[in-house]
Image (cartoon, rainbow, N blue to C red; front, side, top):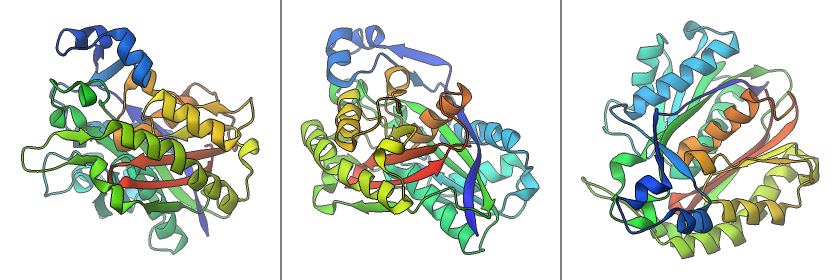
Length: 311
């Protein structure tokens, strides 16, 4: 038995913060932000928490899957910005969805969280420990942003993306490639009881643009799919220069879609991969059944990715 993504859903808060808006809050400007990270706007929550956004995305995915809440037996929420330590976000989402008795846990590997969580769901279903799962990446990074620090305030945002993962006779989620670079773990951090995001941007950039592509290529190899056969590449939405550098190193086909949702959504950490993938599917930019490489990387420094068949 294997597993597959049956449906996707996403949610973003209504408030849009543009680069021009940020220019009134911190010393920056639209041209500088576009040139440095490629972001034009981002969504910021006003009163909605991680569990709220996770639930909205999960409701959309569940409705599209043809399953109901009683069919779900596993809920995983990937997040590094949960407002509370207990109860976890997964049980809160399960309660709101009406899922009766699921295994439910949160997972924190920051920006690689969704791919880690998707692998966990795939492993549980393949082992017979679960049959139908909801996997969610959700972040409210606006809670941990120092808005006077332009190294982070221009980058991070809020949102959620979700996938319903179900059993399948033919595996449509490839083997995960995951790991970390612990010696570089302090480059991105959210620490303390009143935390704020800190990162060493140039060091992170160098690591992402030189180290990630080899792991992404290995994920393709494990799935038996050559990079040039991919219909789409959905990496963590860190910044456009990083995305372009990884895509170039992979040697994708000129027809492959490279997700760049960060231009309008900013960096939403664990939410960025499912959010971008859900939008591609909603816009019919990737054919059903086509191979798509998902790859997350970030705080830790952790990374994880797999080739999936587009629902």
